[in-house]
Amino acid sequence: MEPGTPKSSETRSRFPVFGAICAVVGIAMVVGFRSMRDLLGELWSDAWTVAWLVLAALAILWGFNTLFERWWRFSRNAAGPRRFRVHLPRPGVVYLVMMGAMLTGSLLGRSNMLMLMFALMAGPFVINGWITVAMLRRVRVTRTVPKSVMAGEPASVEICLENRKILLPCWVVTVRDQVANRQESMTPEVLLIHVPRRSQRSAAYQVRLQQRGRYVLGPLHVATRFPMGLVERGLFIAAQDEIIVFPRLGRLSSRWKRENLLASELVDQQQLRKGVFDDEFHAIREYRSGDNPKAIHWRTSARQTQLMVREFHQSREINVLVLLDLWVPPAASDEDRLRVELAISFAATLCVEQMRHSRDAHLQLGLAGQEVGRWEGRSGPASVEALLEMLALAQAGSQPDWKELRRIAAEHTSSLTRALLVTTRRVDQTDAGFREAWRASSSEGDRMPHDVQVIEASPESMRPIFSLDVES
Image (cartoon, rainbow, N blue to C red; front, side, top):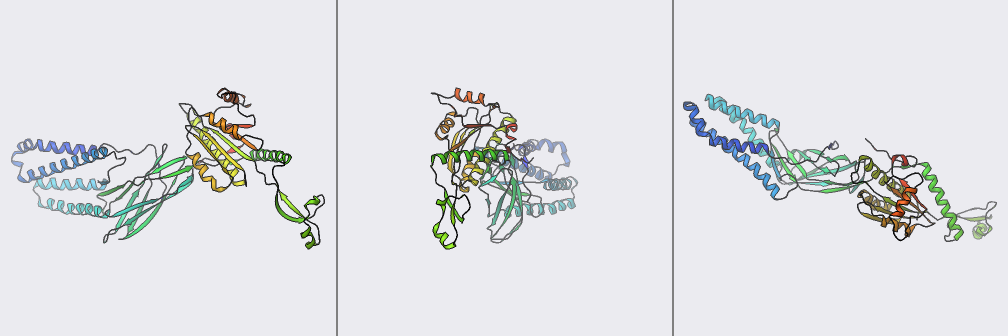
């Protein structure tokens, strides 16, 4: 199925103008009945009286039924349209106008042939309406959605329609869904040609969700016009699901990787001087000139009749602390929002790379925006989803709480940890202005540690170390 197309605004229920007009016209026909009869005089007949009153009654009933359903929906505080709905598509309206012309001509010209044509046209119209009503009885529609997806990647949603009727199958059924968040709204749909009795059929549509965060799906609108397309019967199902869209992941440049490797080596050198960690056994190999004689494995050497040594590798990994400062001014511009998304994408990419390529390093993330968040864990792919979900739901604020970030930095910055502060604020090249602002907002001499690297989340500052491909 084709992907859903974005809408510029959310779908809103409109006032039933057509129903109000029908009610007013019907009342006017009843009030002006005697005046019209006196005006036509001898041309007026008993058939005209019956037709006039029947049309007036139908207009009044249709109009007040539409207005009542509208009032009932708001009185029940329903977010979506009413559960059942009958709609006349454009072919049905044209067909109904032709029927009215036939009826009017037969009454004015007293023509039995036109009355016969009207009766022949009314039969299929009524039968089409009855079939569409029967088609959607005892049907059940369910939706299967992925729990999470990356921003910009297609997400597949499966729609399953179960026909629980004993005798009648379902033909040409359209299921329309709603997918929306704060920024965008989509209405994807699927078409099920034939669903036999007591069976079910599935179809899937794909949407490409561009914004990180939470998307809400629902309600479902099931409709059919089978067989002639003159009357559409709709059924609204208030089934809601949600998809968490993770932030986009970019690519760290070779320059950043070289700096990160250098930082790791510096940490290892400090650890070697302290003697805190032991190296892990890796393999046994042949003795080479310059190897430590204490590493010779004598039993293996005796079996191999040559000197064999134990080989070790360093088991030390650098710990990473990421502090994320999501600040936006009260009247945020597009550039400010771009900085927020860039900061979150960079932090997500950095954390994912650290967890995937490190064996036993400790990773911590502190976040300050509308709310304060904190996450910590060991490196490994199992922790990626929880971290990305936290970043996906993060929202920037005009007054982030820096106290929590300072407390995390004071607790965890050490010679064994690389600390990074990613901020959406403007920072000069020497970081002096930002550090001065940090110290000014602190209390009791709490200062920002000098070994915390400050990174400004702007396209100019990020370009040498990070790239983010965004599809248009």
